[in-house]
Image (tube, rainbow, N blue to C red; front, side, top):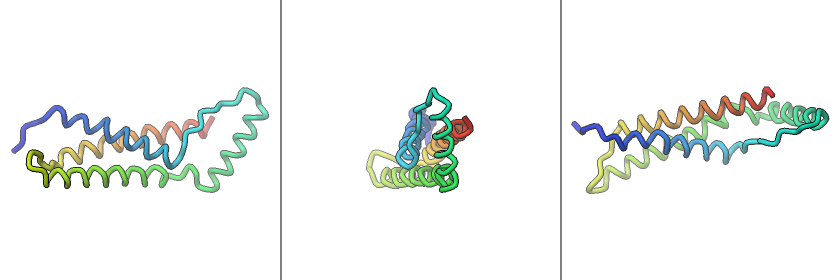
Length: 116
């Protein structure tokens, strides 16, 4: 049985960051907050059209998460063929935790932005 490696915990933020980049590549964040009421109404109307077109669907967060998980599994499979490395299901689990945490955080950010 392998000993606990504290560096394995770095998988959580690394795959969380990967997930965030993948989500932003699919659905860019709009940080422009208008000051005037007329501009707010225009943006709200655009957001409602985007919502009807599916821009805020959960699949926009699920697909990047599955891609990141696929990268995590591929990375561990690759490490199993290297002479000085070992593949570990624990690392894939830590990757999954980082991916899930990042996706929940970004989903809440988009959901909060939509409600404003």
